[in-house]
Image 1 (cartoon, rainbow, N blue to C red):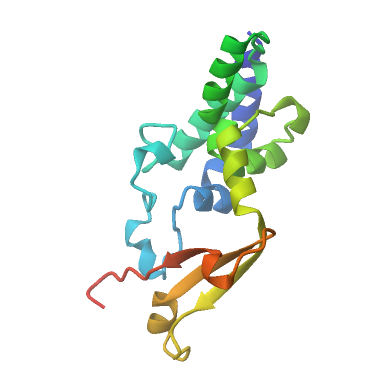
Image 2: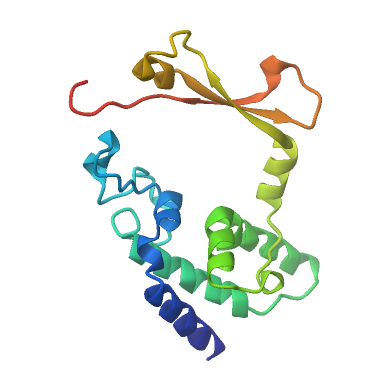
Length: 189
């Protein structure tokens, strides 16, 4: 019964504050709403097409459905009972936590905790895969690298952009974590 009451409270607050249409929520889901943007051709759906990115079957097309599915998952996490401490239960708990909404979508959860004033201590999980990834990454500094030498040409400059994550762990620049960003142009440009 506590789950339903908690969920009803969060749903009421989300509806009152129109959180499903909030810019931050929609950006977390990669919805773009800028009418003048070249990316707005797909404004009614997320740019992410991987179903694993969404909790709701309609999450790619409907930010409200994804918000509701996230709230349902959070309410279940909030009210779930902890398992026992024997080895089998610890293994099951670890597997379950890696699939937890808290582990899969930490940015969404952090925003909802802040927006809905959810007690941080009440929603916590061990996320071994996320923790391992973060310790391997050990981020210290984020840099935007423009690989194109002609910055006066925005299409070229932004079409050749990298994000470099400098680590606390000593590595050479060639070993730092990097992610390429490419431009996708619409309308035959």
